[in-house]
Image 1 (cartoon, rainbow, N blue to C red):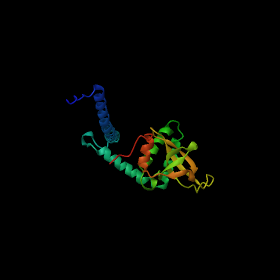
Image 2: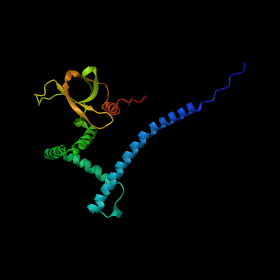
Image 3: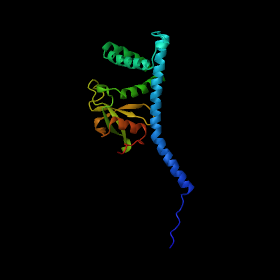
Length: 211
């Protein structure tokens, strides 16, 4: 019996495989491209802005003596200096008074609050706001991933000795809200803060990479 002729791929099936391969390549390249673009834009913006301050506004040096990277180096040193100054009790009081004023301005307080959430994520040491990843019990048997921010309110006994504070992030946007719940309605999850945050922001789409 003669062998059956080999069937050629149908155009629709071939097109589907091409699109799937392209989508896989796009999924690999797009996050890298966007991350690189964001970092490049940030560095260029800082460099350009501080160059204008150094050369044109303050007149510290003529334009021909300015070298690329000086603005970025100055920005890094300035941020480090501010970090040192923030150890001062007086400076912290002034800073809190100023930010309290900002948080009373409509619209501005929302934008500022979102940036505060992001900035606190990169804080180090004891300033880390998210101590543990937890699941909070909700009505109808539902649970939501959150981040334990406080496990006691000794200075505010009216809140309750058995209450904890949990930050619940929103999906596909920066921001969220804080709830005070009984400690027995919270259980710890074996996820890192980064994994849980990525899970929440992407509405559960993100998964750990397979090795």
